[in-house]
Length: 96
Image (cartoon, rainbow, N blue to C red; front, side, top):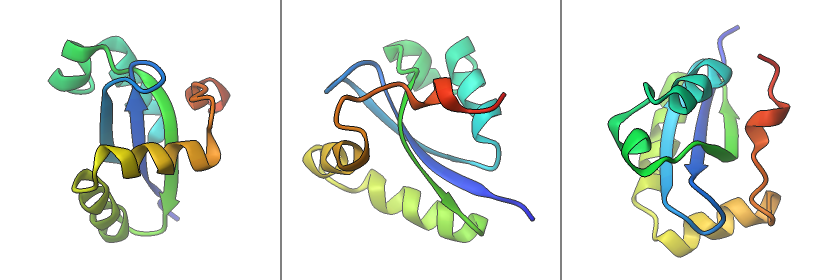
């Protein structure tokens, strides 16, 4: 069974945000941290995983990612803070 994730990275609390989608969250996070994930995250040093959500299909994950990308910054912050009010780096808890 394949799994898919939508995720939000931040440089620091209330910092620059990046929303993405992947089928391997640990690998993708590693790529972002190494500076090979995307030019945006490399340029703005956005490496802290602050929110993620699992989906059963790629279609659902991509649809959710597109929706979140169109949200206002305030809504994205509310989404993050609903489960991670201190903006801890959740990537530290992922099995690698």
